[in-house]
Image (cartoon, rainbow, N blue to C red; front, side, top):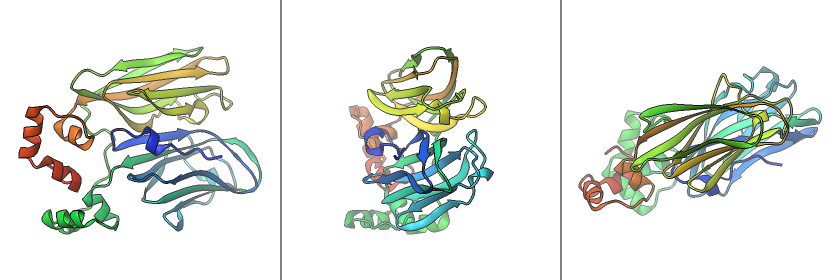
Length: 299
């Protein structure tokens, strides 16, 4: 059974980054553990692979028709669940994650992150994707080919737009609310990292995250990093962020979250299709912002 993120359902203010934190039952042979397909109009970047160390397991990531775009030959030599493997792989059509196992393994601990982008002319050109006639004209107007010769766009910073950082640190022994945060008017709140004490068995407790009335992630603590490291995410809220712990097995559970606050900018409102005030619209038009956002160049 796959453990992929339901990208089209959960993304709201891209770019955003989501993790899947669920164990998988492996059988002897090849196991499809996650697959991403049908996520148009978005582009994905697979990052943040984390595995429990287990001798003999082989991980494969097949991308857009290429087998073993990423291959880890023995998962006994990975960094473990408290860290991430160095992977950054763009996906435009199909990504399949597989684990080859010499024998059955129950509740194997596995975690991954996908960063979700809405493609710009610059990003499509970088990845060699076909442009529409209108996009081709914009690429010529802004000399996108020349821009890409001068420098390669840097990886998206998950902390982009953050002015203040805050931490939530709680202990719960039963189901309850970790935090319920209302976003101040004119600001944005960004969930940036999650961690928790890891229980000794799967399905002991789940961390359920929602924002702006959209259920985003349900994470099994069994696959999360321990409190010494946060699993990076980027989940933007403009109304409220609610994080709750669903305890299934009695015990003490320690959870830590990191989030940021920042001003909601006119550029972000254009990117996300939000309503602008007359003054904001005048500013956006004077800066040719709608076109620049579509191309993917700075104001």
